[in-house]
Image (cartoon, rainbow, N blue to C red; front, side, top):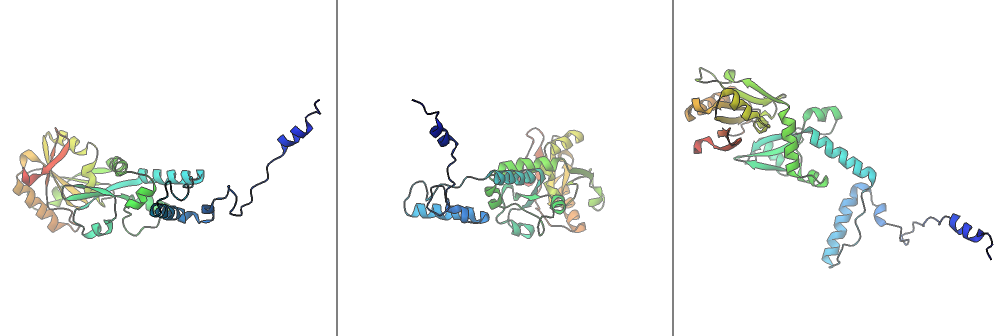
Length: 272
């Protein structure tokens, strides 16, 4: 006969005692005693030991990321994607390139593209940065980001800030054709403006040219010439004039051809 189920009711209502964190409980995880900023190194050390002793699956399961950590990681990632810009540097490290040995990037002809955080964002948020805040491979790896993701975001951000100006004042003496100067709104590292979405295509359309001569002579800007109206000698002379009249970091002494039909920089101009 039933007794009213009182004993069963007591069992249902009774809450299990909290596990004692004494290192012996199955609920205890020793990684919890490791400072959060050192847990990744701790995990890597354990995995290295596991490989050394042939233990499959690692010494322990990797501790899942907490919700707060995931949210913080996403916030950092979004801040980077919204404020990253491309920077053109010489392929052979010199000047600013010496600070980019561990930078994530890609090569374009005799130059490289690396990525930096907009200086205005650095100032607004009081982030610690000494000079240009170039993104390293380690930072990108820790955030599970790819170089392609960075490139697309950087070019998108750059395109909103491109400035096209008359470049006649940059070249001394008379020059046979109109020269355009391509940069970005804060001038610094403006040569990367040639990477902007549809920028060169739009210039070619306005000038009614099938091709453009592109000369990223300084890291602050690129010069654009109508290809049908200049010779290689004209462009070489213009580059010399710019270099003699303007102080700045020399990016490259090469000139390139932009093809409107192909919508790309196709080759160094001197090789055509």
